[in-house]
Picture 1 (tube, rainbow, N blue to C red):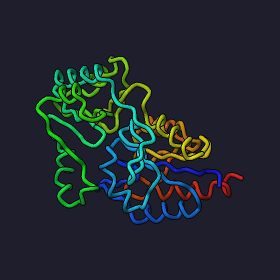
Picture 2: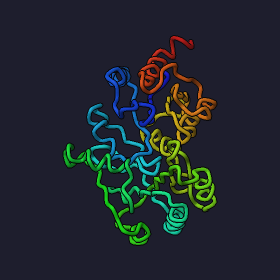
Picture 3: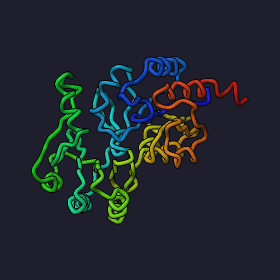
Picture 4: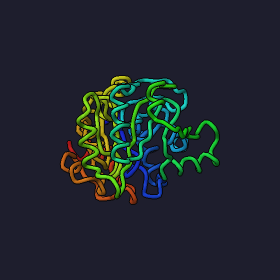
Length: 280
């Protein structure tokens, strides 16, 4: 088998628009594992937000979360990689967000902090009511995000900044990119992720692969958004789903016929499993 590790983005890739993993994709992942290929996820989400999915899939490979700033085993909590945000630059991020009236959340080691709980986090707040404690996302609303940065009650890994019709997303990204020492990327059309400079899904994938003893050329990766470009570029086989951003498709080795609502990951897995036969 040419490929030994298959890495999938979550939202817009493995998850359909209803935020579910299809039965077909679940079976395909199990088939992949039966062939001895490890399956991992790389997401911009906090890893607490995907524990229910991981439990359902019975995955135990470390999770790449917070857009690469944290790699942690899903159930033992053993940390493989943790790269917190720099304090002074984080304060500048908050200053820009306030000037542009953009909502921001700070992803910490255990918690997500925000001055305003966006519709995205309110969804998880309501979902917590139906989940066991170990699978809940800890959401903390604070009066002043700057104080969280200054006091750092726990390591802080990522900003998620959400824009709407009242904000200029491109201008926000430009202003944030002007702050030295940070990596700024788009994780969804109106979502902006900010991490420490040098941190990305590709950086985390490199560290994960080294830990698993897997070579770069033995990795297949699939995604849909701009923050997945470096992920698929790093992998030996980079795959874009049909609904991916055009910029991602341009860098991909393969583009699936199916989109995330029609089992794109299953299509990609079949390509990986049959690669030796089709390319011998």
